[in-house]
Length: 321
Image (cartoon, rainbow, N blue to C red; front, side, top):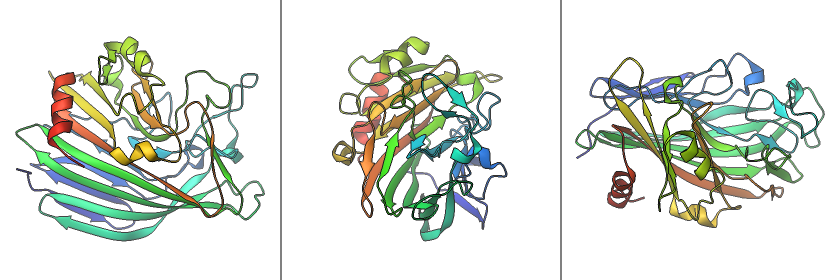
């Protein structure tokens, strides 16, 4: 049976969800102060039911990494990821401020709270950097984002977050979605929904179904670039500093994602940073024509303890979409 939740909405700023005296998640939609970090909403902190922190925020190696975020690292020459832009094998990463776009919060279409579930649908606009000229203006896309926090289960030591996106091209010409790998950097196909783990998760274990993955960065490297059709889920387990505890995050594709606009592949790192993203444009770009839309849906399960493959598979089998 799910445990009750308490939702606190500080209008114009953030939504906080707590259960059992622990803040499980804060969803922050107030604009960030630094445009170079690609202003956009994010979920941080994320905590387990026991209160263990499982997300990182503005780490000194990548200030634009903020918990769990929807991103797009390469979009028609713009960077909705934040920070330095990868310009190709010869130029590498460069600070190009006029490439960095933003995602503007426009309001909530739906906001529903029950005893044990929060669901809201947010309206956003993807805005290209105004420092350069764009055909059709800087507003490139409209997004409907649905966030649903549910299944707070103390007996399991778990809670779940569903994150879906519906993105429509409003630019007037095609949008091209890519990644650093599509721009020439091998096995760096990060884009889409991205999780940055806390510093103490560095060196953690990453694994997926059918024996994929394993301990430390070797396990993450084994999963890097794996197609979602071969691995519909990935788990990441880390050990905390300061407390004698492990935690696990389980990332899963919704069944309908297999019919998405483009094939998804996993971006997974354990070192030098802990990070997972179900990338929607890892190896190849895809195009979104004017007026067209695409959608994806994901689930993130936050759990106390160090899970193994059997525990992850059992959870997914017993919790339907």
